[in-house]
Length: 389
Ligand code: ADP
Image (cartoon, rainbow, N blue to C red):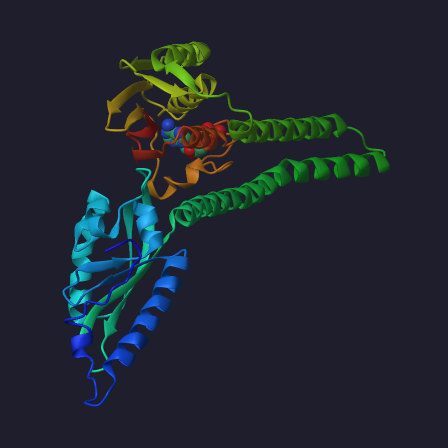
């Protein structure tokens, strides 16, 4: 059989069509031939790949699009030989088709098929059972299209949609907390300025200097918040390209930056040997520095801070941990603390703007990892984060 050349299997197909006694068999054969030719012309002109099986599900027909795609002729594909072109991982999928084929139902199916150039392509296939006029099952006719590009676009679009949703949520959260937190010093500034005005109007300027000091404090706080916001937005906008980074060096620098803090608090920082990873060294210093800084800041009154920094090598990532013996965190706050400006304490007890962990989270995410905390109130906290190898 030639590629694309459709031949009726005379003995079992034509044999099952009931032919009236007095029918002109030559005429009937002529009509069948014409119908066959029409089918061949149509099928071979089609960009869709078409195949047919007999009643035992053995393929005996492939159109030109199919043989052009696989680069093998009908003889080489016939029976079940065409399955040699199916991706080995997808062959088992065909088992799920068997019950459908047994019930002789229509199906749609996807698998990877080897193209003539050695590339596996995603094929979307529709199979339709064929029945003779008397209802006898005659096999399947199938049509297949290459959906590789469409699938790739779908994956890209789905990822973009996910990323867009994530950044939208982040933006909303950001706008909410940022406006909320910036309002607070602004409200304070406004009320003291109004008070100053009222005092001046009444000719009473005794406390004006005191009120001006509050205004200055409020502006300072706003400035700090705005600077932090800028830092936060710079993590993704102004990050350096990734390079090989020796985390032993990174930690040495982070600890050096915190020397005064460590000494003032009699803190001990124990660091295990660290790996070399791909990343942004400036941001990794910041990440460890923020975590160590918090571990010292949130110490209990009675104990000196002891901080252990460890790493566990996993299959495709490293899992780092920064453990302290500080005040701990209740589990209901485990997620909240990573949101920008969210703090569990007021400024009088522990200074800060509540941005440190939000920056840590952004840095870790930029490095393809996750950050989380496990903690016990009054016993200490362990901050974990992963970074892709
Ligand atoms: P800040 O330190 O400026 O408050 P962070 O974003 O670094 O902001 O931390 C957010 C909050 O998470 C802190 O206010 C504190 O309540 C809690 N937190 C962070 N690190 C620790 C820690 N090591 N131990 C206990 N609580 C912590």
